[in-house]
Amino acid sequence: MIELFFYPSPNGLKATLMLEETRLPYRITPVNILRGEQFAPAFLRISPNNKIPAIVDHGAKPEPLAIFESGAVLLHLAESSGQFLPVGQAARSAVLQWLFWQVGGLGPMAGQAHHFRAFASEVVPYGIQRYTDEVNRLYGVLDRQLDGNAFVAGEYSIADMAIWPWIVPHKRQGQDLEEFPHVKRWFDSVRQRPAVQRAYEIGVERGADPEAYRFLYGQTAATAAAIQKGRP
Image (cartoon, rainbow, N blue to C red; front, side):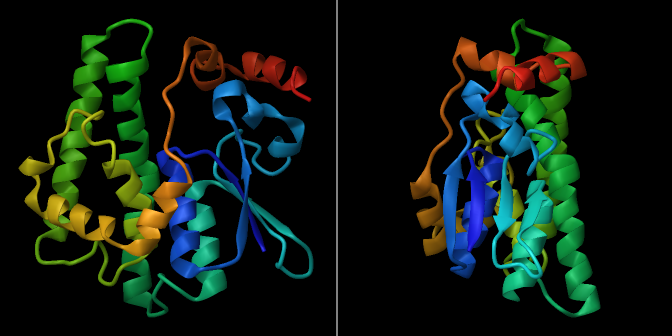
């Protein structure tokens, strides 16, 4: 049994998407990141970076295995299930390259675009332009990769599952899918998968209210430690 520590953000939804695709048995333990539950000591023992998703694989041997970081979670689930990650060296390498492209590039840049476009406490034109443009560049990279390819790295894989939830909020990132026809075709194709539809029925990301801001943005080592001390 996989225990998934979950909030329905793009990174959290990567994990539910993979679990629904593989049909591995799992249960969800919600983590309300809008109210600081990611700083609870019990959760930090599983995810020391105070981020979701994280899992505990209770079926791992010789003892349950805790894993944090969404890319590591996807990789573990793929290797555990024998699904959505090729075994051949070249094909496996292709999937991992695009998985790391997402976790190191698209996700962080799109997240910054979300922040400066919608959540920053002040309007910062340079930040808005900088991250909107960089996300646009990354969409262009993805569009070229999907020109002639049904999926990102050959067959449908954890690379597609990592990338797709970050394309869902494309409007919030200031992007128009009509400018990227191959991304749009792929996006619509993945959206039709039953497992994707089931994953998105589990939860949809909620907007952050002012109380949530102190748990989500602007923390330092000291302020994060202070929040942790106040959590049960």
